[in-house]
Length: 348
Image (cartoon, rainbow, N blue to C red; front, side, top):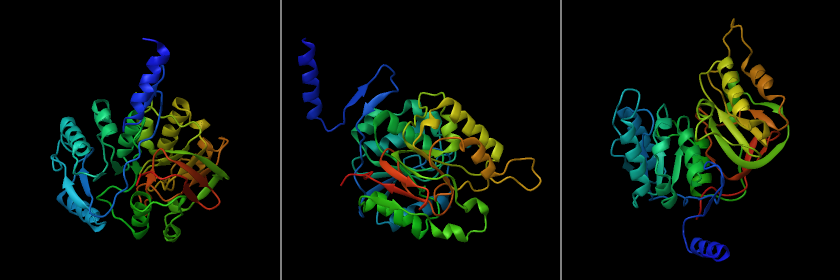
């Protein structure tokens, strides 16, 4: 067939398709894609609850259901929601089945992870990304869910949402930004700093500008432990010209140093547009430790980078936890301690 006519036929076919086109380069992990935005959530929608990582208690399940129902949603539970396999919420096959079932179920409008923990990385290679691409839905979670959100975005183009898990404690601030990003989006949308954090005695909640300025770019990031664990895999991180957000909990400064060093050496983190660090609760060096302080470590590892960097924005393993759409254009401003979304993460 004539190549020009062949290419013309391909584009005619894609124009009539509801699935955004993918154009793969020489490397199967590198492609130009049109992002897929899930539909915005509205009261009355059905939310599928899943546990793709660690298992849950009955109390956590009840809290998750209440949080979702208080937003005006109906709840549908994954088939294996109560499964337990040691430190995992069931076998890899069970957790994968629940994920696939929720994306395939026409009655389900969005998918919320009840908790993080550990286990998502084990199922990434076997996820049916074509199924997800054909059935785009809002997927929300954080911590271990970082790997799921990034892998799905890389392999399908679907925008996911780094936000509170369903079984966490939601503050008014948290709920306001859930609604502002997922339910009632307006553009541009500013996610301001949570002033309540300034009243918390723990110095981990104090903001610190490491490099001042504004940065503009696509949002990407999540939990530092997961980002470093994905290095060297088929789901490795690429952040050139993007705004990177990073958080973690309960890690000593030298361990955070090690993970940041791994990212600096294995990814293009030094070419990011800017870095927003969340609240690293429980990560301060203890008195008497022969250690850099948490902030000294961040300044030592990141201070040489030529980009705006701020510590202490309101996301991570904390109560005031914003919802961040992965893959949308945004602007970070260190002076106002804010993220400003320049496009919606959902479609009407």
